[in-house]
Length: 208
Image (cartoon, rainbow, N blue to C red; front, side, top):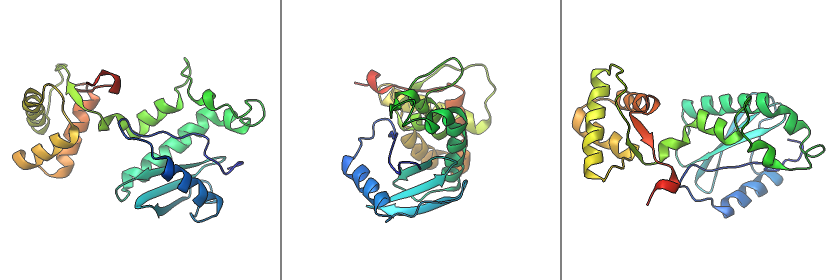
């Protein structure tokens, strides 16, 4: 808030950064074309170039999510959670960013034994690795529900057909088409399989 500038940004894996959009966003803030929340914890929503902007005010920072689809309750909950975790872990660095740290944002990128980097917090809260292709993990002995077992078997079929790579979006579509489950049951089952390492994201540098 002190600089009204962008001090840190990132994108989901595999999503190319659009410099034009970032510059338009910067100008929209500069010329007050986008309403920013003023009270801590307040959230404002806007649109820019066909994208949805959701911004939350913290004590010292604003955090904005830029997404293609209309925000959901999860979007706001994740934004709220990230804002609090970031300021709790990096409040000192934000307060002294332009003095002690001389504007060096590398302080946000360093993992330590006591806290994650900002990218680590982003992954923890927003689950951006769900956008990556996944591969089959190994059954852990955990007892799967009937829905989870059906999704797991469908995952094995998809992996066999696609040389081991599974896009979770495709898995959802196939489950919707073939299993007759509702959207929430499918997404919950997929999420659990990822959390339990039955489905493992493939890092971008490992993809061919």
